[in-house]
Length: 599
Image 1: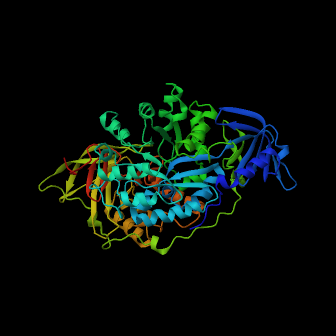
Image 2 (image 1 turned 180 degrees about the horizontal axis):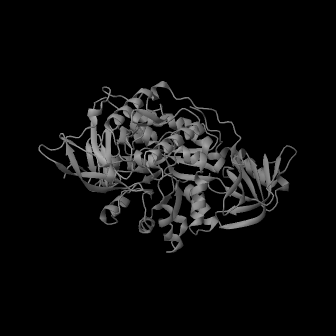
Image 3 (image 1 turned 60 degrees about the vertical axis):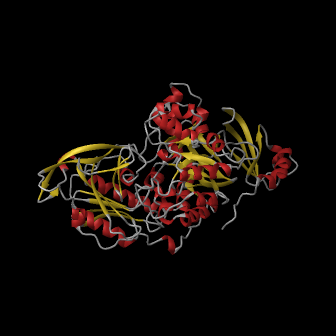
């Protein structure tokens, strides 16, 4: 396991004092900047910063006394000195790439700290997979902290993942050097019911003195919500309304507002600050999640901060929500989140604060990116063969496996339908009247009802769950299959044609996982993800190019949703209402019960 590149503050504190006093020279001095001070909420002109041992030693009006013959001096030329941005909640696997490639992609956008929850790989490879990502994260030149996955599987009894983690494994991981807390506790009914597994996981985290991440994906702010908060989760990113953010903050939680590739939850919730006047220090910005196309083409946390400013926040306030607020929440205020002495020297040179125009990015006092381009060498990270070849089908799938038998003698059926909601994680529980032909239930392409199937891929059981979905708008014969299927990560196939559904599924099995789209027997797009069926081993820009081809193919087939692939990948997430699919069947997440396909 690689050692952290950062020396503990206690090992270098005396040296930092000497530099601040002018007794020893700094490694780097940045002069003539506008200091964005997130502690005081000020922008302080004509400021200098001095850096030694990868940490800030002096921040003030004149660092001339810190300059020695070998000190590198940079003239900020009046630009803003902004703390490096933090992503408080995210899943690297959703970027389709490894931690290394994710880091390479986001550093040019000013992200210098990430708090990752690898519960995707945990659902496939268990504790071994978490350790792989933990060790890779430690090798990064920026700060990548790991939250131990809390719910593997996410909803016991309603799905079967490739692995299971309990309180014992969580307690073990709390001793790992790079574990910062417990990942989002998605089993919110279990917390409210004092489920012993949930209690054990949370208690182990609290005993270790670490942060408990939350996930309350319900609009019900009554007793179940109060029971959940009493159970220990300290933050939540599942709110979509201003009242959601207000309720969480009033209960002592941090409201995490997310803007990812497909979830646009900042604009409504930030009204709690801009219109209701709540204290912004209880609000944190995050992505949860961005895929590779967004990362390469649109940005990362800079995009979220910019969006928050556009909603009416002062730039300093928005930056606080992506820096100091995050660091304090995870107990890292002495390490991260501000340009102040002792903290890691993660900072940005910004020429336009409101537009957050980032000219240069420094991590631990080293320039990592300039003018939107990575200049640091971050070597590729090799995953072992044991993390690959995880798509296990009992046999090759045929078109017949995706046919849905109608009840005996029926000419039409009234079926439950999963309704996709654009730009939000929740779905709708819809109903549709569908025709029956030759004993098989037909799709209704005219009314945007196509088929969804979940193919078991961990234990080669041969199981296929068939149901219906609406909202993608496919108008042609096609199918898209993905082994990214939060959180159990079986294979999801959505299509208008059974033959295409079978072909897409079989292609993914052949390449070891990823996402594939076919139409009338022709492969239109493929993003190979051989690492646990979740991540590519290629560079982020290559993956992004393949993802662009996928997006174009989905549009060609009639889908106009923003970031439809992200919507697709969440259709098996049985901890977010209203209706989902699992290897156990169709799940009504409002009641956490399995329901019949036909009403």
